[in-house]
Image (cartoon, rainbow, N blue to C red; front, side):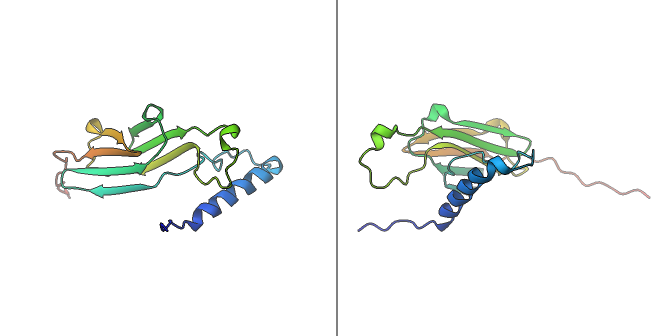
Length: 146
């Protein structure tokens, strides 16, 4: 028997999403900041190496053409979509656990990140984003006059 990963918070997120959907018609607030921006959240590993940062996200079943990566104002944004199977293809399943739909992740970038040289590639369901470190950082000592 293969061990499986237990993720109790996934159930809480699903419950929260369903409760939000249930009470949405009764909400009097016009604030849309709490509206869910994604249907699932891919797990991510981030590693710092000597000359770069590496971010790896598990995105099985996502077409690489449907992934958008934006780096601006010190933030790296990754978004994409995994299409759902039609209800006809799901007939006969006794359990469906794999999420589908849109995903959206944002990460703060360190000041040493070289935004001009960020590169991404995908293979075997893993998206790898390489964020090189800047070759030089601008720093100086400021003398206080008095």
